[in-house]
Image (tube, rainbow, N blue to C red; front, side, top):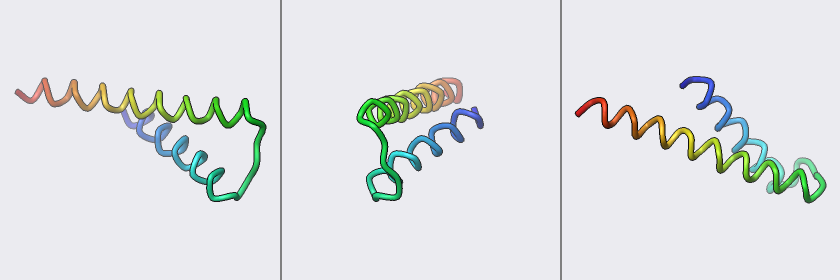
Length: 56
């Protein structure tokens, strides 16, 4: 779980660094990073949902 959180935070950080103009990339890299960020956020949501179900 902790590794997924770290991956998510790093991917969000990379995407925002790009949008703030700190680095540039090819369009394929931009699209890949964006979808990886969405995938990691989705995985964290699934894990959080599992924990909520287990509490009840």
